[in-house]
Image (cartoon, rainbow, N blue to C red; front, side, top):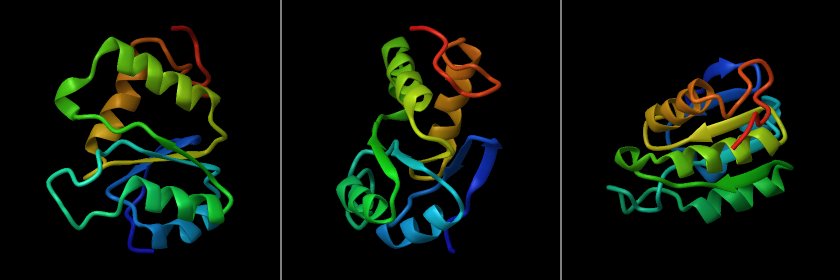
Length: 126
């Protein structure tokens, strides 16, 4: 697999831009869900669309969540929305964006803000 996955929690990992071709191997690694945090065509007209990755994730038996955002526009409302999705998603979940950094950052912010339980990544409150 060419996708470099970084494990942050037993239930959550991050990666740079994923492709439809990566989804079979992601599923084989035990992931139950995938979340996209990158807007389509952000700085790269050749990046796979969220829909193409979603279709491949579903074929591979995983749930797919599309929550694209700009790293400079993280709001309290976005943190709550993120926490709701992660808290209710089948786990483990793989988050991806351009480099993996914004996915890592929003995960950490949601835990630090108290929206996600640090032990099991369940939703704490909104």
